[in-house]
View 1 (cartoon, rainbow, N blue to C red):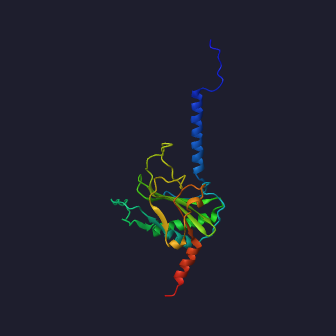
View 2: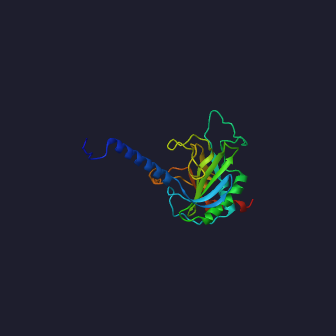
View 3: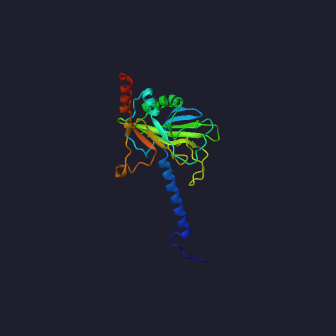
Length: 244
């Protein structure tokens, strides 16, 4: 009978422990990257607006924030999408008109529905919360197209995150988990690679993006723009009242 004792773990045991540790770290990273949804503002079959705590963005926001629906309408109306140019023009989606490469991010009908819900969310948000939205803007299923993201306010600056713009929900599964991304539970997660550029008009109300060493190294890269919304409102008001 072999009476020898092992002094430590075998190579097989060490490999198993390493695999378990890597799995734990991947799970921890996934949890950290997923916002913690806190309160539902609105929900139906195609649109979900909820408050969430996102540690990647941070806290200390100027919430609750006071905005009118008209002010939010002005902000959303200024969101512009610049599609990448292609030698072979893509065919429009079912029910979608052939749009120019530079076009508004939202239609007038979409803004009428979304603006009051985002205003309600900002009124209810706490300093550590942001307002998220997940919207099926193109149908029919199973080829749903999703537009999603979030907003938060810091002082006179409104931050707008566009994580998805008409993104397909049938994109190949996540290589780490081999499952399809659930955009409903994580509206800040891109479902597909995002190529279109998000900008704003008028450009004078847009805060320049942080560059180089000034960029926050603790904030993950997102398609995000910052708008001086109060300056925008003043500019719009002055333009409306300007004598002809």
